[in-house]
Amino acid sequence: MSPNSTLWQTILQDLEKLYNEETYNELFLPVTSTFKDQNGLLTMVVANEFLKNRINKLYIAKINELATKYSSTPVRLKFVSQEEVIEEPVADRKLTIDYRQGNLNSTYTFDSFVVGKSNMFAFRMAMKVADHPGAVANPFYIFGDVGLGKTHLMQAIGNYILDNDVEKRILYVKADNFIEDFVSLLSRNKNKTEEFNAKYKDIDVILVDDIQIMANASKTQMEFFKLFDYLYLNNKQIVITSDKPASQLTNIMPRLTTRFEAGLSVDIQIPELEHRISILKRKTATLDANLEVSEDILTFIASQFAANIREMEGALIRLISYAQTFNLEITMNVVEEALGAVLKTKKKTNDLNENNYDKIQSIVADYFQVSLPDLIGKKRHAKFTLPRHIAMYLIKLKYNIPYKTIGSLFNDRDHSTVLSACEKVERDMRMDSNLKFAVDSIVKK
Ligand SMILES: Nc1ncnc2c1ncn2[C@@H]1O[C@H](COP(=O)(O)OP(=O)(O)OP(=O)(O)O)[C@@H](O)[C@H]1O
Image (cartoon, helix red, strand yellow):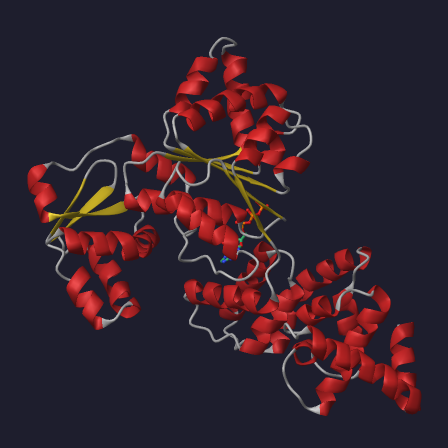
């Protein structure tokens, strides 16, 4: 394959847009030659070690992401220096591509992971683990609620390690697949657990997703325990995710949970509103949709899908696909058309929940005939501030949650802003019968 290969030329076009002229001219343009082996490993030769290291440290994840996007067959790019090509032929280790291809999603990188307060520690430690696999935190245990980015972060570790050393064997496995694999092997041949062990032992990094699923599968747990010890003793990196801390896992044998606890545990929390909006912005950019989604609309979506990033992303994708299909500009009406059904179902589920803060926000917004983004947002006109203060007051009255938590439901306003809003509504109601009437009517709804 020559440097004029269509794939590299296509990638170059994107790189030119993504990075400044100097970087582009210095690093990407002078690639001297490329060749592809039978595993789909595309080797790019650059002039010297310095250029190679810069690309491998800073740009390889993006380049491989683009390669995956533009190639119809599995492909990975590896940059080597001119000297290396002369000294040693590029290694050909058959399994590497299969590991990546079958397991890791190449878009789950550190680069595409938006960092905020809720995941900062987890992110930083994950970077450290990826930089020094097996040496910093073993096992590395990530826990948190559904859809908050555990798999993404775990796979980012795998992708990073692989991007820096294409010969590393990274295995990502969902705990349920691990069980299935074990059970199907036993059903074929009861004495063949060695075959199972060999498959899993021949790896450098194991990423086990949703370990809680292994609850009650005691034979599989036993097998996993043996594997865990083997990998651990051989300094292979183990990364585990779960929906709860290791100490709270039920029906998982203590000899496993205590080993999980002995490593480093990090949690991922629900991101704050601004953080969720940043995630949506990043997602919009990667969708390449050529469609403008305003800040107000992103705020609205982020405020409706607080607890699960997967659902929030799903709503954004649905909205954009809808607008593209019907060739529409994205307005609040289009949001309602595209997401109406999803929001209705979500509302029903919310109605079953005790803590129904957005219901109060919607009722107040309806009562005062303002839109939800305006109620939650930053506009300071009295037309918006009065309903906003009333909504804050009613949430405090009904749920008595901390002022700071209420603030997070209103564009991350701080504790003192919410406190003074609630006090003002309470004070004004004593003197203003219209206001009292309005608040009472809303309470009855
Ligand atoms: N901080 C973030 N930045 C960018 N994308 C994110 C972030 N957090 C989550 N996502 C995206 O949200 C979606 C759901 O994330 P992921 O599958 O990693 O969640 P999870 O915690 O593993 O969920 P589950 O408990 O269901 O396994 C993915 O598309 C992921 O890329």
